[in-house]
Amino acid sequence: MSASVGVVIPTRGDRPEQLRAAAQAVLAQDYPGRISLVIVVDGGDPAAVAEQVADVVTPSAATNARHRVLVLPNALSAGLPGARNTGISACDTDVVAFCDDDDVWLPGKLAAQTQAIEDGAEFVSCGIEIEYGVRRVPRLAGSDTVTAADLVRSRMVMVHSSTFLFKRGALWVDESAPAGQNEDWDLALRAAKRHPIANIDRPLVRIRWGNSHYVACWADRIAGLEWMLARHPELAVDPRGAARVYGQLAFHHAALGRRREAGRWALRTFAERIGEPRAPIALAVAAGLISAPAVLALLHDRGHGI
Image 1 (cartoon, rainbow, N blue to C red):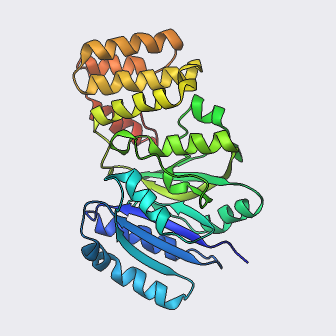
Image 2 (tube, rainbow, N blue to C red):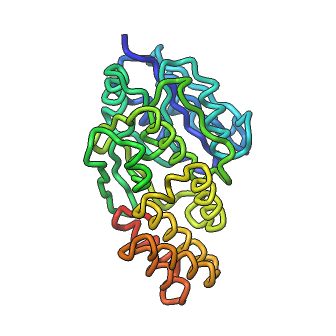
């Protein structure tokens, strides 16, 4: 018998079209097992959100008796981690999966990932396709496993929250993540420390960049990186991984106009790895040669982030 799957979609209720597409893609998966879709509304009106998706989820649930759809308010701490944990708590399934409300699962995702669970994996990710404007760029890990060392050296954008599928009860999202920053990286890193993450290395999720609530929250991003450094000291040990994090800190400080702090973190970046490109980019932003949003737009167009 196929594993039952609980799918948690957090939302604020302010992206109805994207949410409808995300829910529809989940319920359209060609999968023989039971799917419980839990839409968790963080700060919005659950009744209004239920109306937004009614014409998508009601026919799907009625057509397939295995499906169940719930729309719930976030009952835990405000923000993305609390919303995810509220959804996990509402699931009575064998495994839990996440999908952001602006992303879309592609055909075959559930079947491939649940097979990995049946083969003994505890936590599974997959490749992604980044959509930014009219461009779609595939991002793959290049491996069928992801280790803790991999996630220390690189954030590995393809190990994205919308790809996560794991055994229910194995892990919870840490609600202490400041403004919900890096909760997904932390979860993946904790999972990889338990067992290597099984990875289906082909694009099975479309990640839509350009609609994130967090893209320019520079101070929150700084707090999230400092939180990760405190929780996972090994991030400061690997020179490549440390340089990447320090370079991001330099960039975010530069985006806030904190030239002194940007310079300090840039120097730390160079000390770890002279070839880390984020440091000169941060210095260019600090000097006013280019704006931080312009940098992100150029990188996103190529399927990359800072």
